[in-house]
Amino acid sequence: MVASEEDVIRNIVGVARTLEGVTPEMAASITPETNIVRDLSLDSIAVMDFIMELETEFNTVIPLETVAEIQTVADLARALGAEPARAPI
Amino acid sequence: MLGKYAQLKDQLGTLRETGADPFNVTFDRILSPTTAEIGGREVLLLGTNNYLGLTFEESCVGKAVAALQADGTGTTGSRIANGTYGAHVALEKRIARFLHRRDAMVFTTGYQANLGALSALAGRDDQLLLDADSHASIYDGSRLSEATVTRFRHNDPDDLYRRLRHLADRPGEKLIVVEGIYSMLGDVAPLREFAAVKRETGAYLLVDEAHSLGVLGEHGRGLAEQAGVEEDVDFVVGTFSKSLGSIGGFLASSLPGFEVLRLIARSYMFTASLPPSVAAGVTQALDVLGSRPGLRLALNHNADRLYAGLEAAGFKLGPTPSPIVAVRLGSAETAIAFWNMLLARGLYVNLALPPATPERQALLRTSVSAAHNREEIDFAIAAITAVGEELGLLSETGAALSPAK
Image (cartoon, rainbow over all chains, first blue to last red; front, side, top):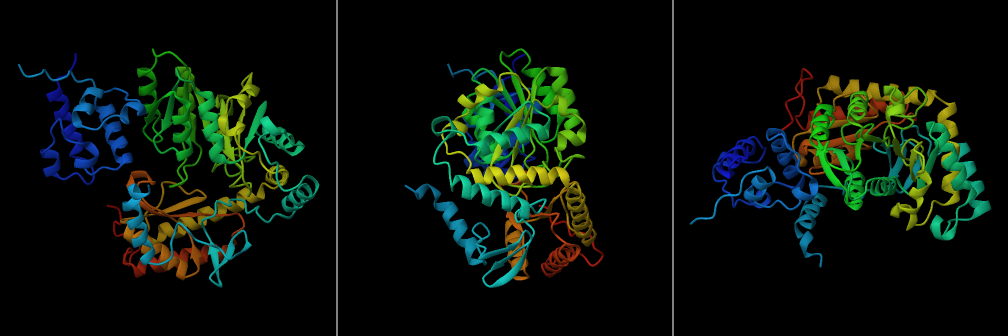
């Protein structure tokens, strides 16, 4: 079953809360547009480790070349297999 | 042009204000495998990777000097374009024989060995699975390969297995890449378990024995020998710049058709080959390694003594005793101060700062040599303990004051 973007982002926020340097306020303000590196103050290796946690959580594999293209939480949700959010009517 | 590095430049400026530059130490003179002179003072070297202490080994120097006089200072080109020297062939035969492999090819550095090996072995349709804590040369080689690359959790065969199962239906070969001993914390790969995963999934296995060649195994062949899984290891990568006291790298294998790699590995083809003097010195160092098992015993004895001494003092270290003993420190600032204070006391170690370290820890990395004597190891333990106390990192009972985080 394909998870909704909302559900996936909820899981992303859950894992982000456990990261060193990510404050509860930062985690609480995560939206699809949040930039992972800039807004969560993660260095390149911290981003790879964050994504590795999520790969386990979602039982999936994200190749490094895809990781390199992930900038926002929405990009990350898509890489984790979320169904794209419907465009507003 | 360099404006994009402004932040790093500022950080380096701040670092230099605190004392010497840990990333640009100049030794005025090297006195022995374990001592050098900096600024007119003698310092003990505890961060050289000179595991067997062979840099001044008389027979190696002799062979190198003879080759230097016979064949000149350099090859002035690549082996593909400008020809192979007898010393290259002799070294390749020697390393293959030592490792019980059919073939070996020699690279100009260990970094280039990984670059060439990974980019040549894994093609566009293949899958590379890298341990998350892999050396930069493994990551760089992977990028050059055009293969699909995934990281698995450091030293975690279950996570590797899960990923291989996930990738089972994808076309192409799967190549697992692990290291024997990891360079930052000195931890060892659970190679027997990785080999079992490899067998079950039909993947290939490459082991980088850069820090374990000459260090582990009854004959010094590395972790694969120690773990009893050499048959399962398809490719061995290693370096001549650590236990063999020189420079260069290699890829060894018994896979049929190996020779074609010489025309594919770009870091082999498009760079100058090793000077014959280096190749001759390394060939001799392999003989020394094979004929003097006492060197490995002395090395492991020194490693155990340093690890036990620092552990008893209350420091948080890497998970197991090995020739790499890393002291985990809470902050980069503490580590930088610690490093400078040790140098002032006449002890040279390595400073490792995040993000180049596992779990973003600041580390003082030490590496032990067979050439250290007991007094030198004890001097190092005393100096590190004294600075730890001075910085308030140790309690009076010898329990660490939780320096992490």
